[in-house]
Image (cartoon, rainbow over all chains, first blue to last red; front, top):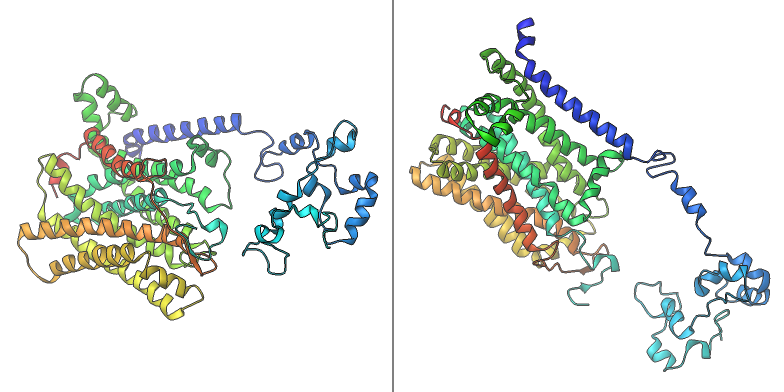
Length: 152
Length: 386
């Protein structure tokens, strides 16, 4: 047995090399993997705080409706009742904080409406779709349809 | 839309997995196959294939070192691949493959090669001079002990490593098949037979590689190419090929008989877009012709030179056929729509990151690495003492 052990010195060396490699790997891992990794899932836990600290871009429908209650009423009675204000007007948190300096984005119906309503085979058949070239004949959608309640 | 027939969902129009992803299972398969041939010599003591033992191990190592490169080139940011080890994702089959790869490289292949070559390394560290002496001295890990007893210990441990290596080789390539076979959204891939088919095709391609590499390497080194050895490799290639072909046919017959909702779409594809690569290249040239060539040698006696030519042609065609099989799985699986009503086209680019040129370079790179390995660790005299 002692003889076998003596003749296995090179294997001990190999084991030591592998063990050293493993220890170096564990040390590198401990040094570079962020401490909060895996706190909540397979990601860096601290990232949640970092995201929370970022400035808010969207105000939310309820904030818009504080001032624009008439638009909200019109919209709630029409086909677009389910759409959020900022889906078309863009992120408006800055506008709600200082409405006089920061104006809300006013989209152009000629380009905005077709994003959802241009005819596309992939859309459900029941969804209102038009081939804008034939349907509008060069007019803007907004000339006939009011975006907050589009039914004529 | 150009290149699109019928109805495709928007995310299916462009193929995401390119020729590089075809290369990946191809290269991994060669590794597993070459190792299994080496284990025939070691574990099952098949004396006839003994001359190929070291060449098979070095071939497996050369291809294994290149195997992850197509993936890294495809994904971009190769420096991020280390994340797979730093923050292991236990529920991702692809992420866990990193550990299968590492296990196979470090514990199986490198260890087996080191144990087998230790005596040669020690002798080379004494006879070489300059920089190469230093390289060999490092490789000895500081132990100059090459006594009979220590070699017996090496042999014993090497055998254990090989025995562990066989299921590891099965795991390595079965895993590649598993990754495709577990994509349940894709009827072309989603079959439990996929890992088994991949495994056997890996053995076929690996054995064919060693059959060719053994001849070329020994010609270049001025060493004899033993006919008894070629005969034995060709015999094993034939047996494994028969099993592989039967499994593929079983899969095909099962699909035809089952005829589920995807069948018409897949059947159409095999008769049109995949006709050349599947019917002509994979089944006819890549499978039936080599099977006939190898099978004829099992029942008839040919002259030595004829046999050599038959084996070489069979080996080359097998390699092409298995490449076509990988192509048909990877590319074929992305050509049809999940709606089963449309088909897209894959046009291979040339000198781009995922083009034909890097693919050819990646196929040649293992041969370059093998050349370096053969210089560093010459298979030597032992192979002639079969």
